[in-house]
Image (cartoon, rainbow, N blue to C red; front, side, top):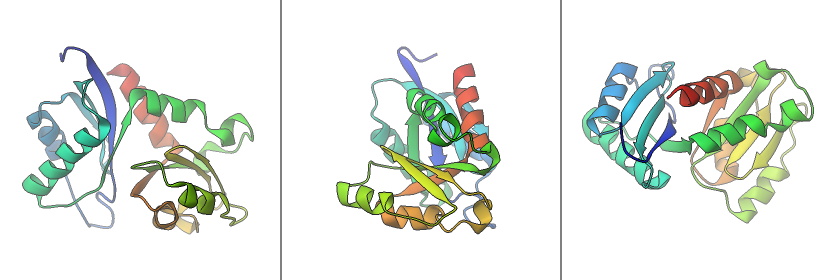
Length: 186
């Protein structure tokens, strides 16, 4: 066990989607272990990894290490977004669509930005309106409700990423809850 370790979630953007950027989760877990991370586990086939690391390393440094390793060992340039245990916990606790509006969890998503968008981009995001879809921004995270499902969403990851001006990846609420549970068990 790492001394002073922290548990984080790594969320890869665009993995195993439509046969593009295929990475076997066993291979990905092996890559993480090879980098010295511990308590490595994956969730689904879409680039979700829970792992422990020395708590002194900044998230962006971890993301850079993982990005470089995937590029070198797997030949893919895949955006990497890191969230700490506390950040995932905050996402779970602060979901406005559950806490305030009691909307159905099967239509809730969280788009996570690599960095907090600029004030201009935050303003642009806040002004988006595609009723009945709804978004609410909290720092680096965009809570998203799509009553017609994600496949029909106008406010999808690509659109929100463009408006945010930073790399983003989206997960459904079930995945966020599972990652939170895995992190608590790590």
